[in-house]
Amino acid sequence: MSWLKQTFTSSIGRKFAMALSALFLVIFLLQHFIINFTSVLSEKTFNEISHFMGTNVLVQFALQPVLIFGVIYHFVMGFVLEIKNRNARAIKYAMNKGSENSTWFSRNMIYSGFVIFLFLCLHFYDFWIPEISHKYIEVLPEDSTRYFGEMVEKFHDPLRVGLYALSFVFLSLHLMHGFQSAFQSVGARHSKYTPAIKKLGTLYAIIIPAGFIFIALYHHLTAL
Amino acid sequence: MSTANGLNLTLKVWRQKNDKVKGQMETYQVSDISPDSSFLEMMDILNEKLINDGGDPVAFDHDCREGICGSCSMYINGEAHGPGREITTCQLHMREFKNGETIYIEPWRAKAFPVIKDLVVDRGAFDRIMAAGGFVSVNTSGNTQDANAIPIPKADADKAFDAATCIGCGACVASCKNSSAMLFVSAKVSQFALLPQGKVEAKERVLNMVQQMDDEGFGNCSNTGACEVECPKGISLDNIARMNREYMSASFTADKK
Image (cartoon, rainbow over all chains, first blue to last red):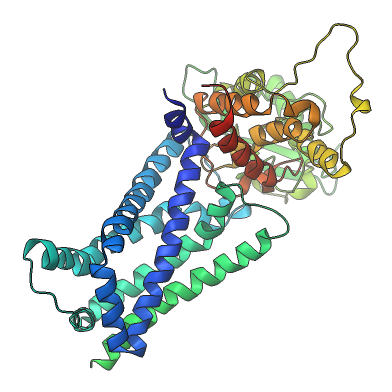
């Protein structure tokens, strides 16, 4: 086995890679939120940024593949590790008090992660697949002003807005543990900055999902 | 002699004849247990009763009974070493329980810690991890240098000592929802990696010990922190972060293939 394969199939290598993909997704989520938030402020700005993101070669063919790889790796490895971890304890305890020594968020990452996975399926069905189809399958003419309208149309449906809001609650629960856990996994832990990372993680886990819910509700309500 | 504040308890204890057969929870009653007795003394009283009744006493590990050896591995009422922090089972007292309470007593649960009998598990996996690198090779030629002659920063010495207080009891594995042994291994990696004597073999040590840990079938760490909370010696998660750094750095820089 090559040393690289040995490293990234070891327990520490896997969690290191999980953490790197998580940190990448945290950064991605922040930029996604900032771009979406411009839709509340200005239709024109939102369209301009969306058009840039959808047509820029670097974004489309360098960053997007990294993102897709990061998402797939994070999900697949999350489930692989969950199965391995469950197998590491053949017989469960008759009485187990996990709440005495750990947070609910940390013990239920697989469930919050699974809801996020279901949400991503819906989200890809709503936006990513039509976008890919528009550009590369149907090869429809470029229209730099279509993005805002397409997004607002999706948020007409109250059920969809509800599903999005619920998913973001689970995203928040996932981030409550995941944000600070990623830093621990890459070994970034010190009494000088770990308390700040934990606080930042909690703030991020509340503000970003709440912001996404606000954007969905805003467009739903203003279109009524 | 009956005492006014003696405890009457229902015990649900894991019974398993050997590693070949399936086990099950059995229910026992004990009465008039002194709140001042230790948990292990209560188990001794149960066993005397079982022997007097012609039954098979409950097998459990114990040795020093003063919180140093790490033998008394019991999962009590859903927690390693029962309620209370930074204690082993022998340091747990019956005053922590209420009269009439039902107490669940189970062995450490992990595939890497197979049950030998009742509450006794085989923790040989820890020994094999230690044998894979948990040592400092010393030239025993007769002119070995005195360790005290090597200057060591106080902060490093303190951190190494804190890590070395790990007694290898396995409560971290038992408490972890993934049965991960990261806290134990990281304490053993850290106690050497922080000292000049241990730095010489640090890269190979961490690679070999982690490899052995994985081969033994322990789960993966997901940073829940349960191990740190339940550890009788208060071993910090700082050690796991250090091991993560040591391992990744050694993977990319060690000569070992």
